Image (cartoon, rainbow, N blue to C red; front, side):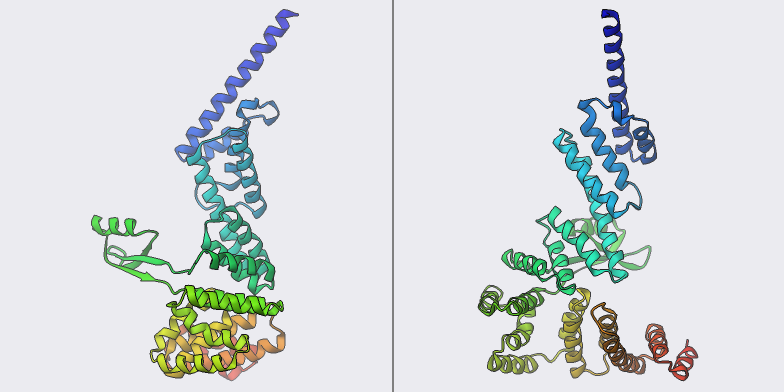
Length: 395
């Protein structure tokens, strides 16, 4: 009997040693970016025979194989969520390779964000919101993800989530302003973006790039406060709506986007005298259409089509022959018409407005192929076959 026990013990010890060797081989393959080898080794391990001391490492590498850590990930949304759960389990079991955990978590977040964008492209706003909201909870310090979640929640009518996110942004004094670092790639002859000033400056020093520039994106405080005030008022909480606005005016007194939004907010709060004064001040102070173009583009990028339309109209009011403003105003009408919440009747009216914008843009720049192709598509909606043929002849 003792002999059998000894043999059993030796067998278990050998199994444990084999698992230890395999785990180390997997780790080495991961670190050397030999992912196919890592997956092959991982799949050779029988999970049912796993020793307790290797369960943490096994759980982590299972997460890594699910999400993929080399090249473009093709993991499903379900796979990515499961990978996060497995990483959490691995850490609870004592796995503490922080560098590797960061790499896999970063890959998982990138994959989820890609899936969110794919859902947006297919007009599945609520599906995108589910993912982005999850990402904002995974990394509470990432205020830009909170902003994305807030905007998607607002667009899809999930106002409880939107209020929570927008209020968090205000409480953290998030403005949405970011600095973009760029430089000209000398060999490719094109301007490229860099994730940081340090990397951009290194490229300049190395001689691969030239002409460094820095561009600061527009503040988003105006749209954050506008949407938050509307939701509080829509809830019947007018006192909260007004106090939120007044507090924002004090904290962001020099914010340009909030200054431009004041008239709309006063109108929403039915403060008519203040609305008239703010509107008059706005039209008297702003003489440069580029100011409105910048605000409109920021609104368009966050899919706030009503604000984009308003600012592009103001820009065109100053300079009617602004090709970009006319084309982007047309785009704003089309995108608003494509929203799931837009009725079929309203969609057609928005498409008609878009046609007028693109026709004006085409007059300004007759050779622009994007405007021509867009007009062909829009004319086709209304069976304007003569117009379609006319535009096709210009391609």
